[in-house]
Image (cartoon, rainbow, N blue to C red):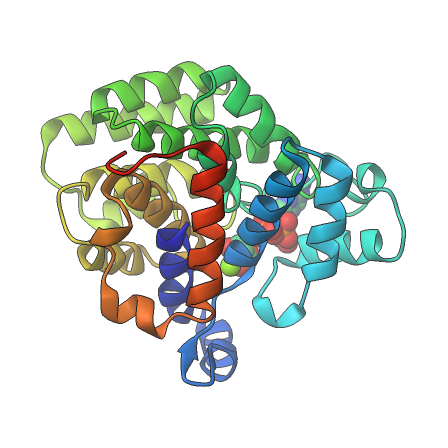
Length: 297
Ligand code: AR6
Ligand code: MG
């Protein structure tokens, strides 16, 4: 969870084109701390809802998402409209398909999925996928958005259990349903087996670096696994050089990396610059306690 917030806050200044960067140079700091974006805010909402309800309660989640919405956190335009409709009293089921008839295929469902993977880490792969799809559906009903979210949640849960790259890619491929995701997972697996980290430009061209879930989820999994044995800063540098939707790719990759390596491997200087770090650590602690994570796991 802390990895996700760091990837988000330190990836955000590099997201998008010249206009987005100029805007974030004004919004990106508060009282000298690095602000995080919608990725971390929605992750907080998911964890608070899971802790309060002890299960996925879509109505509770929808209201938390809508209450927390602030334009200055950089929400995607479709997600912003959905959340404003829910805030005005519309049911999430109709709001979710009001902007795009099939729902959004953006990566906004996947960016909050690590929280679901952590909460349900002890459950079966199918149960993790089901819970994640339910959490994604509120703003991201499109099949490619929910499939990407399930893959990110499962990768985070598997990272907690110490699965190796081979096992992870095997289980993720079993969970995948579409040819689009399967082909990308097969490519990522081949690259990981070769051993050398692939150049960011090639990763962006072949796995993607965009705001669509299909263009970012396998990219994040690849980055997290390729940098398992490197520092957090090396992972961050790589995700920044992918360009495109840097904050969300960095958030998802850093969540998986953090679940694998543990909080004590995160750079202290960056944590000290993070907005509301104490609140995040407290929430992470409550989550760990609720799911019974033990020291050394
Ligand atoms: N049909 C056409 N275009 C679509 C569709 C669709 N079904 N779904 C998405 N798009 P959105 P997000 C396009 O707005 O996924 C933030 O920085 C459309 O242009 O649901 O929550 C986050 O941190 C739409 O506006 O946002 C993420 O990094 C866009 O995809 C990123 O933005 C994004 O979908 C995406 O967040
Ligand atoms: Mg964001």
